[in-house]
Length: 171
Ligand SMILES: CC(C)(COP(=O)(O)OP(=O)(O)OC[C@H]1O[C@@H](n2cnc3c(N)ncnc32)[C@H](O)[C@@H]1OP(=O)(O)O)[C@@H](O)C(=O)NCCC(=O)NCCS
Image (cartoon, rainbow, N blue to C red; front, side, top):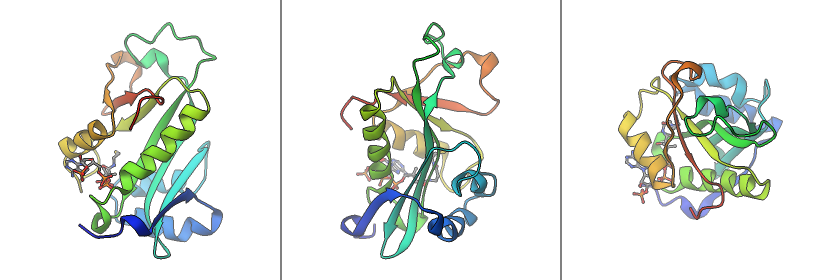
């Protein structure tokens, strides 16, 4: 593990980060599909980066207007004005992993979600990432306080799995 934790800075991405973000995403099989979102296209509201020694080494993409409650068993009656936060992309450069960067990116997002009064933070896992075994991703999300959400199958896109946690619970 790299001793990089102290030199990592978590901050919102700016347009000038797009080259660094594209470079980071290029090595991720899922990255080509995710790059448009990661560089700010579409409806993405949060792009948070981890910077270490002038390089972008981690990225979290998400938003705070999740309202797909009908996808989740037990939440179908949630009123439409109640919103949650959704993490759509989370990536840390392989040589920088296990140094707390993923946790720090998640913590920053959860803190914001709590400050906005959101009901839940949802994380979207899928099967297309080949760099990290599925179980390792599940272990990561469990380590940062997420638990499985039960989908109401009709509404969840194929291959998607969701985990969630309250924004207010301690990380
Ligand atoms: C998942 C990912 C973001 C984790 O980032 P990271 O910076 O390495 O995570 P952290 O160092 O903050 O890990 C926090 C805790 O999560 C758990 N964890 C992290 N990676 C793990 C792994 N490969 N296997 C098992 N547990 C893991 C550990 O409990 C870890 O604490 P520890 O190192 O003190 O034991 C990173 O591995 C990654 O980018 N993977 C590829 C993309 C991906 O799968 N994204 C997930 C959304 S689809």
